[in-house]
Length: 253
Image (cartoon, rainbow, N blue to C red; front, side, top):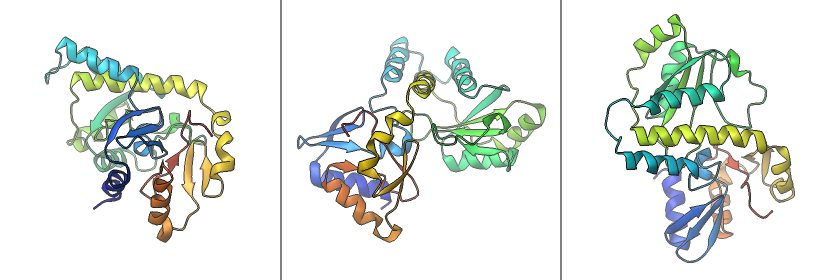
């Protein structure tokens, strides 16, 4: 059993099924509200529910544009990624796993590849990166990894050779991911240190905070017990030691 399944089983054992989720909270069938610091490893960093991204998904479904053909959502998704990473135009490729995306990226440029984490890599100049891997801030997109490659002849030739494992998203999911990127762009303009440091008195004993990300001070060999202790207190943290927890934006400190 992996750590994520372990966490799901422990939540169920204590609180039953999750009935709904909003913002940084999970609402259980035992009427206990859990504060979520795991946030799907960052996929729910903008909050559960998806907001307007979910609305875009439903609108696309209502239009019936759900086949394997191309729609205008494909162009919009690439445009959204380029609006996020302003600079040279980037071509996007979608992969079903992080391993596949990283393998393709390092085949293009091992020294100029990075994985994007919003609000964290303030020292990284993304304009110098040939390849950027983006995990959409969308809770139900765990098998979507976007590789944004600087578009030039050399890079496209390498992607032709190494991009065999790409997938095509159905247009409703393209619409939702596109909207989630614009939601992230908007959040980048409003969320900042002022929204995270207010929790420091509660978290500094247990985590080192970098932006909204929480890196455990707990020793690795004690971490699973710490996960369970937090869960007993109604707090869901990252079950994976190497994946940081996240400040629950909007929660009462």
